[in-house]
Amino acid sequence: MMVISKNVKETGKIAAILVKKIGAKKGKRTAVILALEGELGAGKTVFVKAFAKALGIKSKITSPTFVILKKYSIPKPVPHTPYPVPYFLYHIDAYRLRDHRNLVAMGIKEILADPQNIVLIEWSDRVQKILPKKHIKIHIDHVDEKTRKIRIFDNR
Image 1 (cartoon, rainbow, N blue to C red):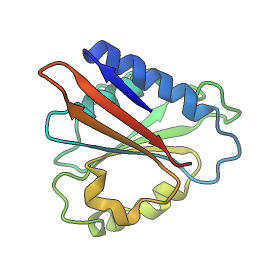
Image 2: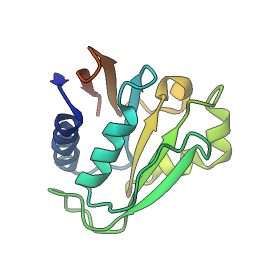
Image 3: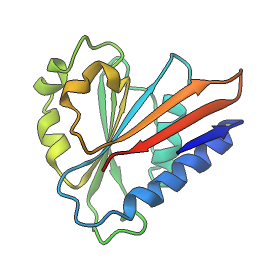
Image 4: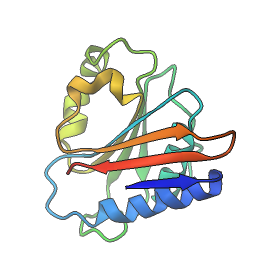
C-alpha cells in the first residue's frame, strides 16, 4: 500500500488506521513488529508518535537515538483485538548501531518473541538480521518539505 501524506496530521491518520489494522490479526504468537525506514528527517519519529497516540499512550514520545530503546505501557486494549492489557510499545532507534548485536545484548529476542509487545524500529535496515520474516515494513520518503510518500508492506 502506498499513500501520500501532505502534513503531520495526515501522517497521524495513516498511523491510526494502521493501529486498527494490526489489531485485526488474531492468534499472533510473537510481537507485532513495524520496521521503519527512510532518510533522516523523513518522518519516522512523527509516525511513531502518531502510532503511540492512537494506542492511547499519553507519554511524550521522543526519539530514543541516544538510549536506543524506550518502553511504554499501552493503557487500554489495542482496538479490535481480543487481547487484554498489559500491552507494551517498544520504540527502538537503530540509527547509532552498526548492526543487530547491540540489540541482542538488550534482550531484543525476548521482546520480539512476546505477543504482548508492539515493537517499532526506526532505521530497521541497520538491524535487518534480527527482524523476523513476519513484520510490517514502513518506508517513508520525502516528496517535498511537507509531503511524504509512505509505503506499507504487511508481511505477516
